[in-house]
Length: 142
Image 1 (cartoon, one colour):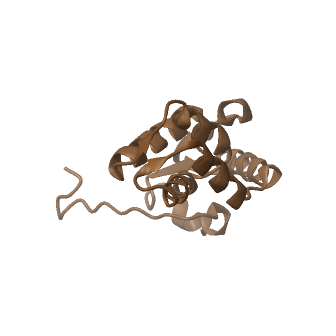
Image 2 (image 1 turned 90 degrees about the horizontal axis):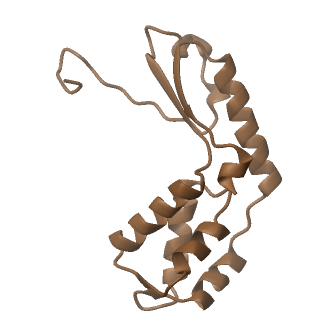
């Protein structure tokens, strides 16, 4: 239905939604806005499991829990990069030492990420039209 030529389907993406002209976002031009914050614990687990499967990486017991815990306030792409970074030391495996090594290589400014999340929550409240938002609370991210 969405791919019929008489019904075009367009997707726009932005890391800074406040820079998009509000006239473009009004109903009739953009019908639905979808706003995603940083993934919560459940989503990070799904991302890690998907990436381990995709790259055929084997892990020891408890590694998935470690990675999920260490990637608080990471974007989905950053969780993926973290898995690949940890796996880069092993030959198709990730050990606890690999996870710790990768953790030392990655720096995330938690207060900045919290601010971004709060800003997205505010931005959604000011946006016209239909908005679907998934912006987890701080407790859900932790």
